[in-house]
Image (cartoon, rainbow, N blue to C red; front, side, top):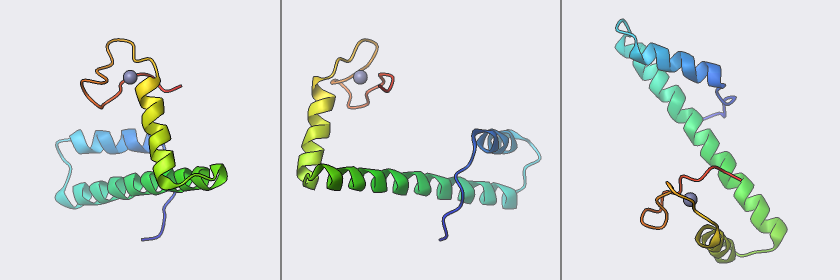
Length: 95
Ligand SMILES: [Zn+2]
């Protein structure tokens, strides 16, 4: 599938409104769902590309980069109400 430009926040808000509208047709629902999934895939592929670029620039193996991410996660401060490490889902604001 050809990459489409990433959705803007305004477009996502518009889709959200359409999804909660009572007059939305199945065809439109399908179209919105497919567009949102494509957008999600695009974000993940960009994140993967960024990660790989960083890994190569830093001269690390995949395992080394994974270890570094794990160490960063384990050693950073997780003030409450972040549930880490009881839950792996860190809710701290990004730095
Ligand atoms: Zn946290």
